[in-house]
Image (cartoon, rainbow, N blue to C red; front, side, top):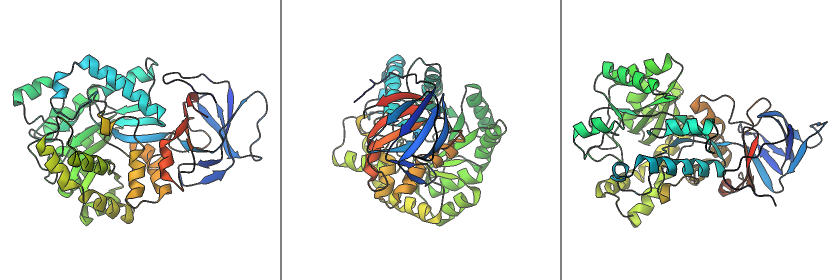
Length: 420
């Protein structure tokens, strides 16, 4: 057995021929006895044994008992470098330590089979993205929003601090009119955002609001969307309540995060506009566990809001899924033990637990996730795509839990993990 230690990226010969027991292509297609040929950073052929001809010099990689998948994608994380549930930790932990922790989190994500992640708001991710791309650290491809945009007193404003201190810290871009929101979008783009994150409802993690209550106006959201779309960037919205979801969609966003309290009108709008829905359904288990045994530092107000969401989340998920809304997998994990990097497979597993077919959950964490991010070169295993390939031990169609068992990880044609 060959096992590459975490952090070691192995440069591969000119051509690799990878064979396994099964292959799920990201679109719903399944191959038995698959063969994937990789040259450089690209997939040059996909087929079955006997149908793919390989000549010349190559290395054969046999993965017995393994299902090959496209590199998995988590479309909602936060590289916070935090390790507790105490809101004050973000203010009391040195930024250098948080950055080092985030680098370790990036490595954990990659080693678990997630070759791409989208950071939906943090001050660290833009720099982490650069460190990964230049080879300073090992991690997944990072799509980063940088600082999120919210209204004064909204989700991502720090309610327990004086407003002057919130503005000084600058962890979010606060704005209160279409013109202020337009300027905030320009600032986010100037800082290097790959996409922009807005907040159109209250949230579980913000003290003085309610997840069901709307925030920002359609006009404010539209101003942000116009600035992003004119330079080819997408906009994502934190929206837990139905009215916040509707504001986001009417404003033109490309994806809705959470959607805990959907109604039929919100679902119909998502369908009409082709908006992606990121339910972060795995948080149901987190909410339940922390209510049963509250960890140190978690605020009482947060526990109360978690409790109000637990039953609504699976209902909203099924409402959207049965209607045919495009769903992408995201965890909203940010570092503490019950929301730790490396456990991103919790989301497709939760989706199946609450009623999704396993093949649809796999699509949500591959093809749909890539499309949600606007990435056309990953998310499926086919000729011409980037060689982001994961091997899991077992068959995830019959047992979705095996997505936790990534024994082979290739990113961009380089093997970063092999444990079989």
